[in-house]
Image 1: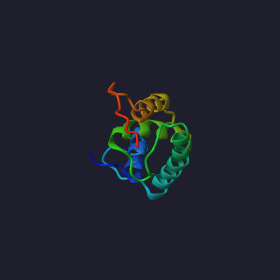
Image 2: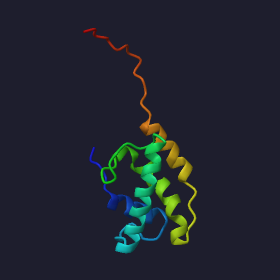
Image 3: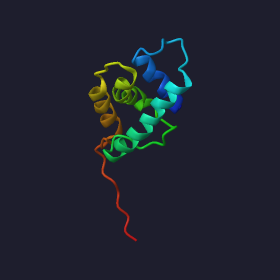
Length: 110
């Protein structure tokens, strides 16, 4: 699975907020604003244990949830409302948590 970039995220967030259509590319200023908000939020998500990746290497599996969180963070900047942020946070928490496979781990003594 290929990672997504900050530009991919900015485009998706602006589409979610209906600032641009699915066939449009975002304005440079709008994309940069989304990226800036994302970078600030990424630090918070890392502190909460909901993110672990470098800012420009977003895992595909986390992309949808992250786009919802960032869309909610950006909504007021574009005069929009978006209520999917908590759903996105829940998806990120599920993605970032490591599930045990139930197998024991062998211990080696030196």
